[in-house]
Length: 296
Image (cartoon, rainbow, N blue to C red; front, side, top):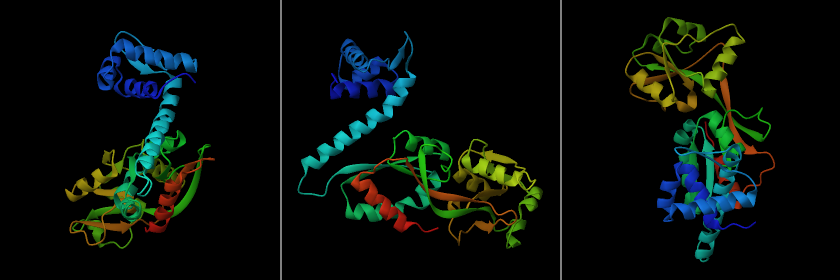
């Protein structure tokens, strides 16, 4: 292949900035020089990577597929240089994890702390994404592996279950439901319910499970991120339906978490990996620490 490392960096710069002018400034190149590098790369590959107009630069379908592969190559190349630069210390490197936000906040810090104490020079990049976006990041090779609750039906993904995360209801200590030991789904109809939007994997899981029992979640407030629902609960605006992993620990001064009864709905949290993907030694080691740290 007749191209240089700087050609790949030029491709990434144009793709991320959406502009030849700004990419040229970033790389300290003239715009004609940058255009020649992109053209050389496209000629070598035999495909167009960008759709160009006088006002717009966008990746082609081939370009969108090529971008995560280039990022991964550049990351691995940089990792190799880091390892060579300090042979007397532990090997350097980088691990990329695509995780649902609830696992990032409540679980990953423990595993990262344990791993980093043993391998301080390994960088960990976390893509805190929604379930669907995180799954696609793993499938495209943008992450070494992911933590997710969907993936069993994806043709390019291996799913290893770790734990069950039941859905619960969160309310204030002074809310009428606070006197209950268990709350059934049909009891929520008398109260203002806070839930995530229909594009969320959590919402799809709830709606599908309830439909099987002839039930429907009647909500008053719809939010995008689970953590936002707890703020509304604290303000006394209603009760939130969310996974246990996303709730505060016991003893919270304002919010009380109660189990949901019939029908019992939970999500299976697990590790997602691309079929046939071989983890780097450090990614495999982190995964071992992750599995040993899982406590729900």
